[in-house]
Amino acid sequence: MQSLIGTGVALVTPFKQDFSIDTEALKRIVNFSIDGGIEYLVVLGTTAENATLSPEEKELVIQTVIEANKGRLPLVLGVGGNNTLKIVEELKTRDLSSFVAILSVSPYYNKPTQEGIYQHFKLIAEASPIPVILYNVPGRTASNMAPSTVLRLANEFKNIIAIKEAAGDLVQAMQLLKNKPKDFLVISGDDMIALPMVLAGGAGVISVIGQGFPKEFSEMIRLGLNRKVDEAFKSQYLLSDCIDMIFEQGNPAGIKEVFLSLGIAENVVRLPLVTVEESLSKRIHQFVTNIDK
Image (cartoon, rainbow, N blue to C red; front, side, top):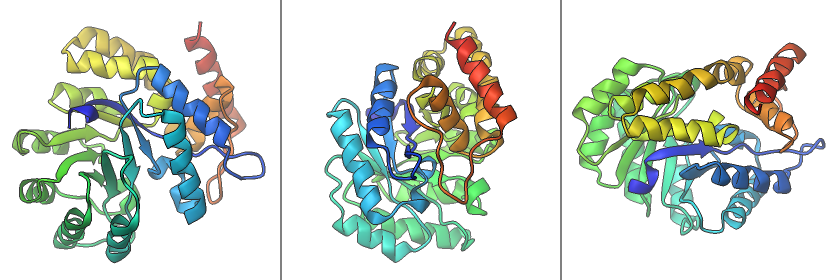
């Protein structure tokens, strides 16, 4: 899956002040990401606030991104949850012809054992007509997908082709990189340690900040992939303060504040999320102003 090497971005769902989906803003974000050099787009990931979207709204987001993309970049669709059979049913009925892979999060809230996580993804792999990217984000799911479970899945199912590893644990990521099958991709799900993961052998990142600063962030990852370490870390340190800021009061409120500063979209999130506080807003706006100079 060479098309998934580099920088993908987990697209936000922009809302208008009345909380309806702002399709024009979503198109602007897609074009801004593409023009900035992003390699692929992830639709309806966690950053899209998909837990607050109705089935009709999810379909609107999908069709809007497909229309805006115009076939320019590969698309990945988030299809995950904690009801295994519901996911299997969606995979059997949804039109996935516009997507190169699905991104499926490890089950949240239920806190399954490692065997439960394995069995969950076994059924998903067997049901999915397109490749599967595992997604490990224990900070949100309350359970970690152990490297042994990931490697078991990667070795047993040819269509499980990658993992978005967002445990924030570089040692765990290195265990995956050391022992993975040759063509299995380890993709960072953590913007702050994406570059170190790439330098350790990772395939790139599925990023949040990358859609706000696509030129700078995607170039950093490309420099890392090409082993231009000093230049890559120069970009890392340029962006590191803002990476901290956009997650300081929750995702995607932070990155939506970046879009507000850029004049691309409003900063509107749906409850239970709220917008960032004024002090953080001012710091984000100042960063955006300074980086554009």
